[in-house]
Amino acid sequence: MNDIVVSILMIIILSCHLAAFIIGYKTQKMTLILSYLNAVFVIGMFVFWAINSLNKKQYHFEITEVFVICLEACILICALYSIIGFHNKTHVKVINSIGFAIHLLATAGMLYYISIFKFDSLF
Image (cartoon, rainbow, N blue to C red; front, side):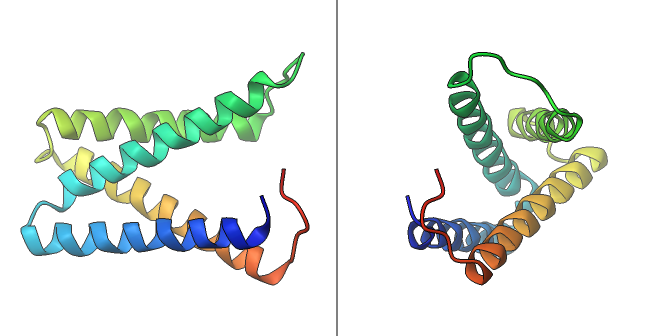
């Protein structure tokens, strides 16, 4: 996988974030749509992390990795809580919005980083 493929994937993910934001704003169901997007994004991250960590014989957790996993687990719990039917609660709205912003900024940062530095192979 080279940097062009990853750049295209980042652009697709950013356009999905933008589309979810616009659709949520137009339909007045911002929290619910952002919850679905957050849940899909977090589940994808967990699957990617699990696949990459299974390849190692002995795995050591770093503190930053544990922090990110706990943060993403919190975002997933709040997203599922919102999808179940409690999307009108204020703390759920705030955490879903923060999770959406974190995912959006991380994806934009990765796209910016990949556009500055050219890689021969990523994996």
